[in-house]
Length: 531
Image (cartoon, rainbow, N blue to C red; front, side, top):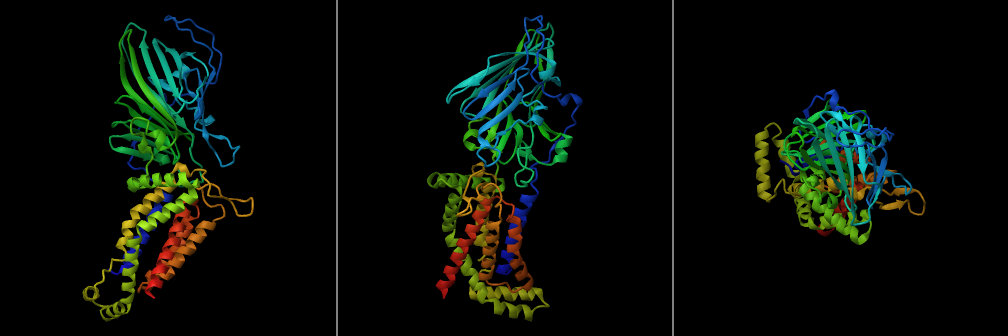
């Protein structure tokens, strides 16, 4: 096999891999379809309203529904006292756009609120509507290091419900101590479900940043993006430790504190609804059962996810080469700590990677040059044995052996680098650190906003066009393959990659552009040294 043919196969495979991953993100495992009964679809969440106090047999007195606010340095949450469902959940450190007066990211929109995020279902009944409620506690304003709790108490028939939700000032993780008391004289069996509901967490234009259902179980992380599957409903019951809705940057998840839960998900009216359900929970007469659960509403930052149970860090998933991507992202954050600009940090990281792979790249270029010198001999062999493929291959191998040339020597060193490239590609594509991170905020000497957000495309397509030009220059500096068809394909690749990268996050384009420039410099150096 000729060196250039091997290289062509590698480059084309890489282009297909990146293009397919960009255009058609797929679930990691086939979902199990679950038929949802009418009871599984909760009614809209309540709005605050006044109910006449009614004295129950157990001494429970329901009160008027109202909104209660929890403020921490990280978020502001608003809950409804009628059942403890969420009305809004705003992240203080994240805005919808780069504009300083842009609205905060709210993980519970008006549309999602109608599906009762943080709602509790008992035997399929929406407790926020079917039960009568009261609340212990009031608004919370937590300073760093503090914690606070709200307790929502309800009665559904003879079942007393106590939901004590505890918030920590320095965490996006909050816990719920659920207690169910059977006030009747006979045992009952309850089906309990904790729900979260989220509208899209990403913009429709961001094809590389899709909203998906995710859960972690015995088979590891599973992610489901197919709308048709989700509209039918999916379910999984194998060792579930958490389930929720995520995008590249944000996660809303439920984490049970005991085994035996079924994770169910459905897409309805543009809202992703996930329920963790436990069937047949026995509650003897006059007894109390406790079912603790936790929730995570926040960014996919490892520093916060690592403090949560249930392998929640698995939600930060960089694909096949995750084990490479995460250390590279740690290095990127380290460099950012010195320079204070993620664009500059990407450039420095690219230079470091290029230096580390310099010996391999040098060996690759040297092998390619040796192959270039053999091109006339190879052309003669192809012409002489064009009707005898086996003999042609034998003579080619004899030629390689005579001149001590490895036909794949120019390609194999590049193959070794591909996992690192893909790992960094995935890290830059998914890292929340790059969301709204500026590089060159304005076009020089103007007030025109340019690369002010490394997580979105270059608005003027300057960097992808320059990247394509540098890739074309690389092709011209590389010895052309003997096969004219291969030569045309190689020259077409810069055009293909340019179109692929037009809508890629600018941080990723900056990486590839800098890598191309460094490769050109290295190739020029070797050519000059040989001369």
